[in-house]
Length: 432
Image 1 (tube, helix red, strand yellow):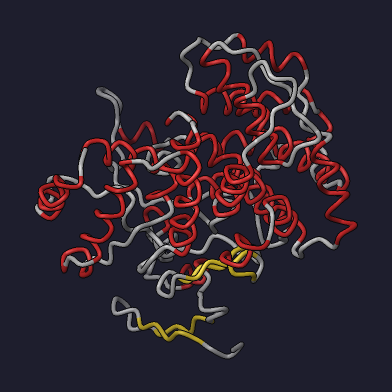
Image 2: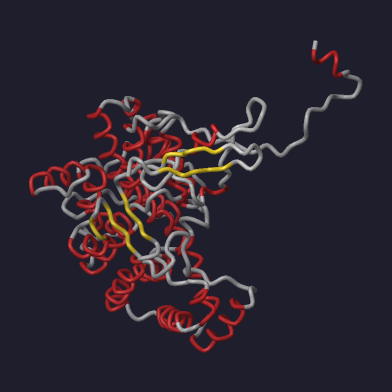
């Protein structure tokens, strides 16, 4: 493998170059050696949106989009969703191995006892307008946490990193639930250390006047599975932002706030909300053929189908479809699920969608589940952020400790005007 090379002939000069291939990739900086006459003429690789550029080496998540494979640290996501809890998966992403019973107990206990927020964070949330989007509140308050924990700036101290990781994983559900309750004018419900990670979040979301909130085991497990499925997904938009901000040696709270801001965009964390709106727009099973016809003509997009990486069925969608059945057995059958199932059946039998390799992705069913549990659509990207936090932190730490990484600073292909001067300024005077 070490002797593999790519032979490049530059037809401008006739020169031949041997470019080393390592792990199926060439180093972009090797292209600088391919020059025409004159200084600064080395080639750049031009790749808008990083369609075929690897920005890092990572041992965290493996995806094979052609074969519908997603693995965390080598473990198939299907196995983890069936047999593990979200906090076990979080430990796996951060540490590289699943915890043994003692490690698991200590990990869960540490996170459970970091869920409380400083009272001043509550006051900060109270300053947001009553109709502020909960994702905007989350971005602002996560960033503010960096001022509450100045020790977070000690990023090359292993124990400090561990503490900030615990704090962020623990406090994200609390921030999210407080943001949701602020939007509807409900008093904040504090964490309950007797509950699981997912159960405690449901408690902070829905507890009213009862002395003890008892979450539904089905809904608790469904939420846990959804968090597992969102825990990491290689170098997506928000993860790329997490690594880029982290490369400047910013503290993890600031980097996480930036990643959450990227997730706020409708093309990333808001996709399942768009699915829900589409299903409501279709309205009934009888209207699906007409809607699909409009999609085929290019008039509309079929939300929740297709993926940048997966060219076949998104493996997370297959898991989540079963979760949807379990949840709706408790909450009651949703007409939106009937529409979704029929839409999936019609699309997967249609030559247009088969040709374009448009298959359901994780967003297609997750919105239905969230809505059935009772979450407003504005909370969908917030739920995504809770699940993705361990992945962001694992990627941040890996990038920080990677000796090949430097501060992120992409190049550009300049397309603006050549040198020009203000009226009345002579070029000769400029040169002097």
